[in-house]
Image 1 (cartoon, rainbow, N blue to C red):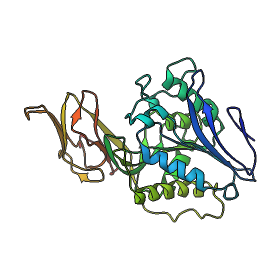
Image 2 (cartoon, one colour; image 1 turned 45 degrees about the vertical axis):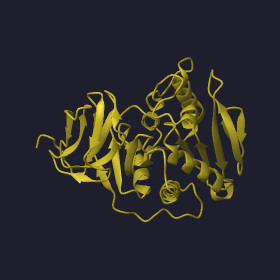
Image 3 (cartoon, rainbow, N blue to C red; image 1 turned 90 degrees about the horizontal axis):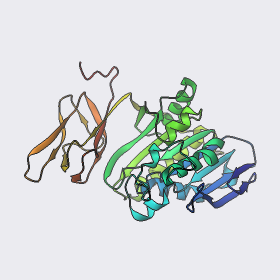
Image 4 (spheres, rainbow, N blue to C red; image 1 turned 60 degrees about the vertical axis):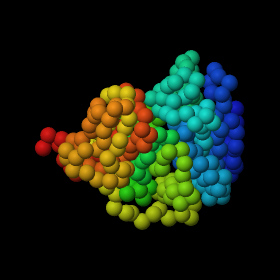
Length: 322
C-alpha cells in the first residue's frame, strides 16, 4: 500500500489529492493510480519550473486517462511541483523566495519555500519510487528541441537503466547528464533510474506537440512494463550527446540568436550575439565543436548571468581543441 501524506492508495485504486508542503501552507496536487498486481512505482513530476506548461498538461491528461486496470504497480503523478510559478507565469523560480526549485534538492524542512518543496518531494514521493520521469519544457523565455536527459552521475547500473528509459521515449536525441544537481539527478544518485524530458517552449504548445509528449511518456511506461497490454515501442535510432555546453550572458543587453533548436553547426560558427542598445556587440557566442542546438533563449532582453543557449556534441570523442 502506498502512503502519500495522510492518504493511502489501495491496490486497484486512484487518488486525487493535495500533498501539504512540510512546514508551509502550500499544497501540491497529485494523482496516483495503482493496479491490482504488485509492480514498480513510477513517479512522474511536472511543473518544477512552473511556466513549462506542456509538461504540466501532459501529466494532467495522462493522470486522468490511465485507468487502474491498465497498470501493473503504481504511477504517481506530481501534477504541479511549483504552483505559485504556474499560476503567475513566473519563469524558472519559486516566486516566494526567488530560487530555482531544480537546484534545491534534497531540500530542507526548515528552509525557504523552495527547499521545503524539494524536501517534501524527496521524502514523500521520490523515496517510494523505483523509477522517475521529470517532465520539463522550454520555459516562457525559451525554445527547445525535443530531447531527453538521462542521469550519468549515478552508479553505473542506475545510469544504464536511465539510459534505457531515455532510449525508450522514442525521441531522436538523448543527452547524458554529468550534473549532480536537479531533481532527477539527485534521485538517480540515491539509486532511482531517472530521466528528464524536454519539449516545446514559450509557455505555449499545440495539440500535436502535446500528443507526442504523452506518447513518449507512455513509451517509457511500456518499457518499464507498468502499462498492461502495451508493447514497448520498436527501437529507433537515437543520437546520443555525451558533451553539452551552456552559455550564459556576460552582460545586460539584447540577445540575437543565429541558430534555432535542432539546427546543427560547425566548430567556430556563430551561434548568437548580445548587443547593447546602440547595436554594439557585447558578446559573440561561437560553437566550440561541431554540434546541435538543444535550446536557447528566445526573448531579446537578457541580464548578466541569464542562460542564452545550450548545445551538444554528437560525435565521440568530442574535443573542442581538436
